[in-house]
Length: 275
Image 1 (spheres, rainbow, N blue to C red):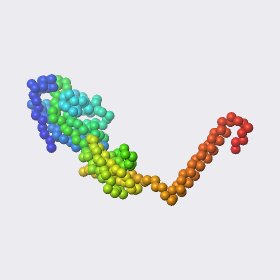
Image 2 (tube, rainbow, N blue to C red; image 1 turned 60 degrees about the vertical axis):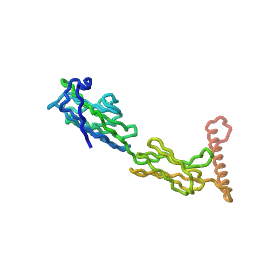
Image 3 (cartoon, one colour; image 1 turned 180 degrees about the horizontal axis):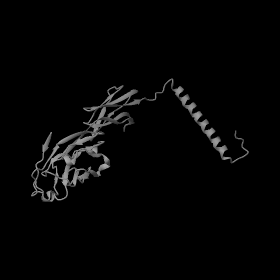
Image 4 (cartoon, helix red, strand yellow; image 1 turned 30 degrees about the horizontal axis):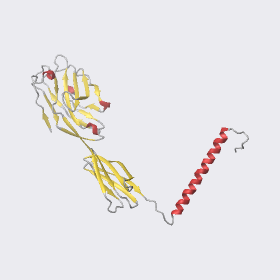
């Protein structure tokens, strides 16, 4: 859905319009655009102006947060109708002009979206030379981000009361729902969230096996797995002890061999017979 912004006359903001007539000006932008984290999004912006012909310098500007005084994230200038719009401001080259300002199109593309891109964006056009007309959208475009779930951490940790618990943290928008699957036996759970992240703990682990955390929202599904095994003493435990002792002996023998090799290379005692 698009709408036209009614221009405010120069009597209201003389420092912005600098004597330009409001007749024939309009700016067309959507109220909201939805983008997905990690992908690209287009912010549409078209305008009309009262001049039949214009072939002098034209400047395209995009701001964030608020009109007229917000931070400039993109700016390009085209000197004539045959000139490309040369970028002078563009954060880390993630911004790309999609439209042609000479054809009244200031549409912008933002690549590799991240959570910090959530904001309100305002497009602006400036005619230079003898005209000095300037016009900017006053309501702007709200960029809303969504994201499929992503597991960012899964582990088994010791709690404050020394019991073991499985912990799973995921992010997404809308906030994902987390579910644990595995050899559960009525384990208590706790859930906490902040921003776009949610954490769910599976408390008092007592059963060995594979525990899987599943995160879902309207844009997708993700899962992560952790394995939990407790050491159990029993009739076969002596076999494990012997195995660890054998490995320890081999490790010590390796250290002795390496030490002799280093001693021989040093050549401190010629009388020592090194093979």
